[in-house]
Length: 313
Image 1 (cartoon, one colour):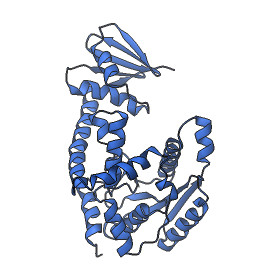
Image 2: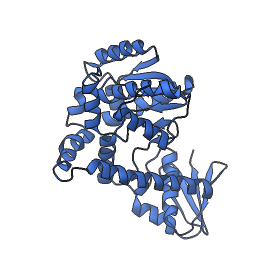
Image 3: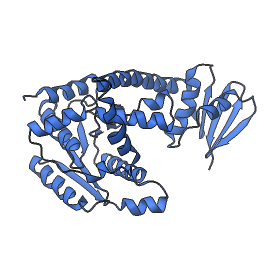
Image 4: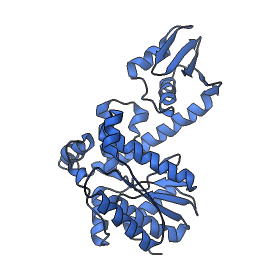
């Protein structure tokens, strides 16, 4: 199977970061836009080399009037490939209002919930999304401005348990060129241009300014991300070495290094909670023995150099 330079770049990225194994069953998240249609086409070609079994998942947010057309477009396109197809319709606007969260957050929550439910039910080995290098830049800026630590700056990972992002090595321009040259059919999501959403403001107002400053900024950011990915993997390894989980309680010894804070914050993230901020984290690490603090639904108790963190019922 012949792969062009763009496809080889993704093929090599998959190999370098061990994103998939030969014969893996992969669920591809496809919206119908140029990014996800590119991912579908590329993985379909690579599947002929690595014997992947592919399936496609489409989530209709029912936010825009074009949503029904996009759903039909994806289904018809997938049928041409003869792949398994999964879809769901969900009223994101109503869910957003009922949950009192932003449409962005509501859409993300329900989309990933759908993907992971399909992955488990149909026994897919991995989920693949079409995030690319520009998404990495966008996420880096978003998290930096919102407030995060080094672990959080690692942003989008090539592999995060079952979730994978095989296109993090290519830019938006690379994708656009691929779509044009290879005549990849796709739809245009008008919501991607709305400045009502925070990420769109970063995408359309901030990132374009980088081009006039540094020509090679995307690759420089990718280099930074590779360093941050290594750091994040190190934190995960330290977490596994240092933390014990017994009777609904996390226990670990404070050793006076940077991982003390990272492990504390990671416990919250693994339980789907925002971690305490920098100042709060330091207060917890430095509090006296036999002292305790309550944050969200967690009780944190310090016994000499050990932190005991339990989730309240």
